[in-house]
Image (cartoon, rainbow over all chains, first blue to last red):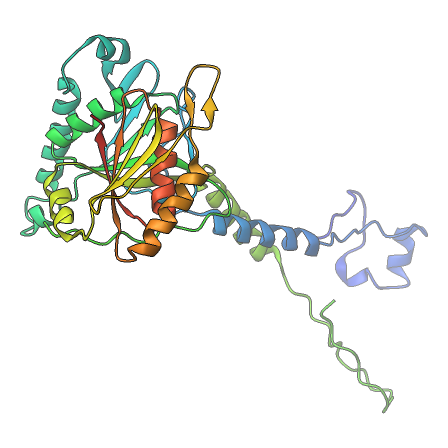
Length: 194
Length: 162
């Protein structure tokens, strides 16, 4: 719709009339301005195409955290939905709940982290409850867990996290990494018979 | 812009309808605006990927162990990388140096070349066990697993060394 200057103007049927229309215009130029929207439509189309390319149907499984810097990897696969164990320099967090303090773990001699194990057992119970009507429940259980650790976390902490996860039934560990650009996706891993 | 040209010739006095058609782009702009708003809201900007590994000694790992034609163990630690096979092969790839905080800088390129050579000798081999020492950092563990996967050894098991 054109933009018009407010004020007195002839009715539409007189707009082209030389008699009435001319009287009202008083020799001024028309102030109707038509905006050329084609460049804007082009730009919006480009934006939509770019954003569609970026779109991920799985959503954000792992959130970037300030205190966790992830390492780069070239051959990573797409992340899947699974319980997330976040390990930073201070604490071990499972799906948003702190379960252990790293300093206490350093002093502790036990391999298993009990609160972590209990938390993961609860997660597994929840999964069992959701899939209680599935006859192939045991077969479909993959035991995936995502470990999101800071680059400076030593393996002596990670092995305890992994051991506790294995004790709770999560023996398939996915290490979270940042995907570097230009990398080729990793080949699909051959299924392992149970 | 998208208008049809008037045919030449035959200039009679009869008034002809203009061939130019005005396309209303307002609905298209509305639709695109909605799309952009939705896609911006749901966009994932950080590309996080995963490196899959199994824990050594679990049931699935033991099943994979039975399929192996060769057992390949890669120890990561203070000596750098030590690659051992059940066929008797053993290769040591020493670290390139030490960083300021005393951490070893591992020769990842050397490891990649060694693993490619191993894979050339055993093309069916897909399993490797990475045994890490306590002081190995998460970034070094991830780089090691990434190198193994890149060399074609996709079935990675992780365990503690020693």
